[in-house]
Image (cartoon, rainbow, N blue to C red; front, top):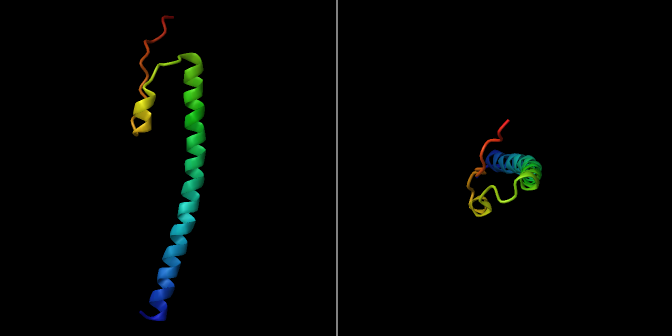
Amino acid sequence: MKYDDLQALAKEYNDMAETGSRMWTDLETMTARMKDIRNMIDGERPGSYDEISLLFGGELVLDILPDNK
């Protein structure tokens, strides 16, 4: 490989590392918010969703009926 090829690889690596760092920060923020959401739901309607399915990437599906107003 020539010098320019190696420099291009180094730049690609550094760009990906920077992107990964931003993604990690975003993931931490999203994870904290998701925990807050589950805690709020648990406070209002404990046991209203399947926690096990969330461990395997399932969606948060509420097993509740609408409030009667």
